[in-house]
Length: 486
Image (tube, rainbow, N blue to C red; front, side, top):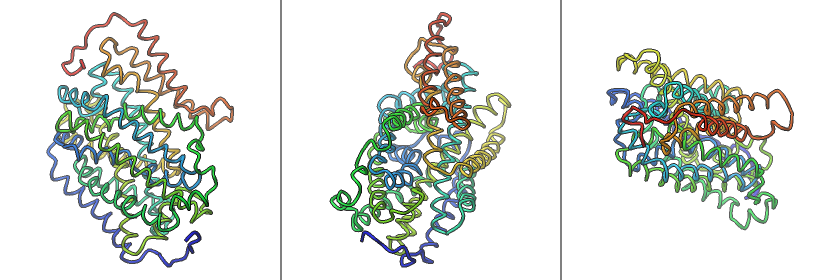
């Protein structure tokens, strides 16, 4: 049990390949079907504002439980131990905070102002230039998020078909971009239901019992893994704290958090959906970490941690189930990539083109621009994935950009009436430029000061500028727009 032979005794069969291929074709078919169900850009981006609690929970899961949660957590558990669970715990904490403090209020504001995007709320509360910097920040972070998921998709396809990473990435990017661009939000809703069911089935219902049967019992893990594998802080407490803070803040300012809330049929559905998602995130993250620990016994010499979970499935699962579970794994990743691409598409179409380029654009023009934007964003994310390849490292760039730049003005927009656009704008700009500059300096110098996580200098710059700007602002006057006042 502790030393399986890595032969082709459990290799992929025609049935397994057929299941994976059928799934990919089904994603495209659902995208085409959704195309015929949409009437306007409100359907394309927020599903007509009519989704219930379960659909909202599935969309939250699909948005946040992807490559890093499943593949990345299993890989880090293989390399470092149970400390890998911190990624999913951070997701659960962030999701809980947004559900408790923001979801219902954002839904009410969204209904009053008829918002489609996060920058809609920011402009309504502040002004157009603040909207523009919020749009830029959101777009940069979500391209990084999409890139991380596409890299994870390529890793899975690489194991399934034995292709190169570049070939696998090309296929993953093509499929995700095609059904997202064609079908929009409704396509994502349809596919995400299927994808989350397959994920829970594959990782929790099937994967965890197989891990336990193949040496992953608690006693066996404790007796055969090095003691440091059970150190919750092995990742490094500075990195863990930065991870938890940046991810939690990203929930508060992430555009898809706002889109989920806008698309709910009621404030209670907007709030209860992410509460339900918290439970599922913890279950899936725990299962992925457990499988990663087991893989540390079974495949100790695997070079890349991101290959551990696909290899575990390929080697230990029986024919048929192997294809089904790999499909579930691929589904988890694709379901996060698609919403990230659609988010930046909304930024491009609604927050830039319609707002600043062509305010009189017809519904058909906006529809066409939306499809083209989704395709372009998917291509850019694919290129970033090809350059970087490491799933969690890519995603952490997005989290630091989003959290440091946007969290303070966003909380002020929702909860603090007595502030105006100047502190918000300059705070966002200071946070964004500091984080980007810090990341850039880490690439060109080994100075120890730049080993500090970019989140902290970015957040410090944003907070300092906001406080100074607020102290020297003009006397406050209420916003003129009907949707602005919380």
